[in-house]
Length: 332
Image (cartoon, rainbow, N blue to C red):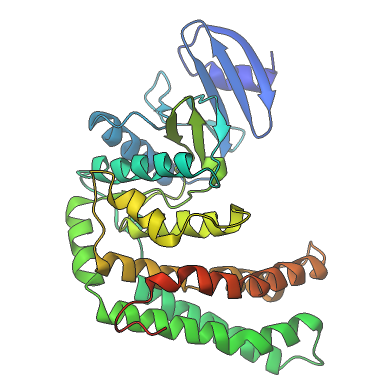
């Protein structure tokens, strides 16, 4: 039995049979159940918040999550040698297959139930309310401008600089389009409703955080959960589908209908406009550029250049895929 793991698990009341170390965490087999022990860099406040979110979901009869267990002293984590560890359910199963239409439908139906059942959390600290989309978009404009000026003052142009300059205006224009869509929508009224009910978004949905176990779907890794509008998670699912799918045989409108027809949350045209605005955010382009220009280089510049080129090369297919979301007043 791993010595470090044993010391940490001594803070829990467990009937341990054996411990298996796997990639990124420990699997704890006990007589009554199986758990996972993970290390986290989350702040104590973030861990406490995600624990409260999960308790609220469980109290509202949404069971398809990994529950965080408290220590014998009631703490949601153990601090050991300045590192934080927490114990959750171990959910065996396979990563989500976004290319499987039946499975994707199950994910979206379960996600709609998650959003509905997440409501009702009280006394949420300000830091766990999502930033409004227009604020984020304006911040992106500012960040792009800073990077453009950084290139202007550099000595000589590298390949990455030339790619960035060539595509800068395209992504800047997308931000302005998204701001226009948000300005014409009822987004702020919807966010007021979200803040009144404290509806939660997962905000880290991808195949690694969605577990398919038998015929059921479970959500894990709540490190990024925030009070936010459901369109945040739906846009994330659409983005991941575009990334993972080989032929994109499921249309964007079908994905929206899968969620809308769940019996939990029906999406309006206004919601679809907000999803479109979120999809127009140049997150991939900006992240690659920030990594190249802003961070210490412990990586090969060619790798980030490849990331940027991949993002740019995929945009024609991306625009074609989201075309059905462009409706009256949103352009073509």
